[in-house]
Length: 347
Ligand SMILES: NC(=O)c1ccc[n+]([C@@H]2O[C@H](COP(=O)([O-])OP(=O)(O)OC[C@H]3O[C@@H](n4cnc5c(N)ncnc54)[C@H](OP(=O)(O)O)[C@@H]3O)[C@@H](O)[C@H]2O)c1
Image 1 (cartoon, rainbow, N blue to C red):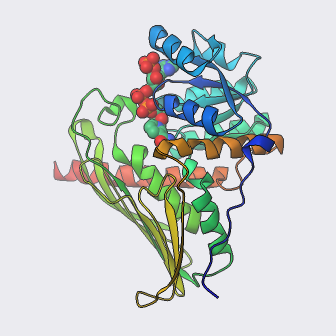
Image 2 (cartoon, rainbow, N blue to C red; image 1 turned 30 degrees about the vertical axis):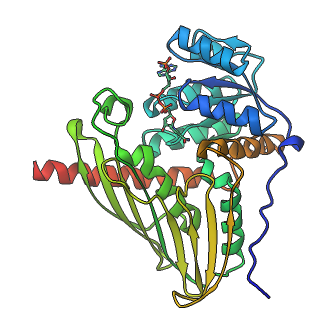
């Protein structure tokens, strides 16, 4: 019998109760709102950002009824159930805590915050308030990730030895852009590195030992980082991230009985291939997500899952727990510190 892959079992968007979303930010939020309005039963009903003209145009373009003059006005709006925080990372903590204090469920763009300490504060506050709080690590909710989890749970790879994942691109120096600006949470580990680190965490959990080397640019922002993560099981993960390198943006998991390859870009809807045996094997099976014209159209999967968890009364995502979110931020904290110390020592 030819090798086959498990069929992804995801919630049907039409069977999940529709939440009324309040949105903070209008940049990546533009693609997020388009995706949820096109592919899910979820609805953005209110928005706030800084520039009133731009925000009003955003509301009109997406058919959003209410434009709020402030974050406080949005989070206390009794007409919304959940808040999507889509502002630069240094603002996530304060805005997420405000939404939680107002009794709203919160989906916070990646990275959830600037550090593991902030991540713990946010997730603890959500749990205490009895609301669902999670990071918008949308990769976890893609069909290919569900297939991957089922393959791993069935033990088809044998003992997992190695995870490799990378995310890098070339982003020319622009001092005011949030990627290059320390005051806006600049640096590649927080922006893109969080994806491959979170991918490794989704397979192996939180590492025992973290080794990191990297480079910094103007203002001390990390521009490249290469990490070796070691786990108690004996497994290791090799992670690369960069804003000056055209990396392939792939992920793979290798074990004693086979491997999984996720197509590029691995963090969005792409493909998954299971190969049993080693490099000489021809026994493989693939699945590709051919649903979307644009990668970010896949942002909706996480929002359907989020609404299904709210309906179930959950305060954390079962495929991305609070400990997992904090563990990833701990890896980023450690790597940023190691790279900053190395840069300081060689200056
Ligand atoms: N999931 C993904 O694929 C993805 C992709 C990109 C970014 N992200 C994440 O999303 C977050 C935002 O990134 P971005 O690229 O959208 O950033 P951006 O282009 O810099 O846009 C930031 C947005 O936040 C708003 N904003 C800034 N300060 C604010 C404040 N004090 N109060 C209310 N709104 C404020 C801005 O409003 P004005 O325009 O009115 O000034 C703007 O709409 C980041 O954490 C990033 O890592 C995720």
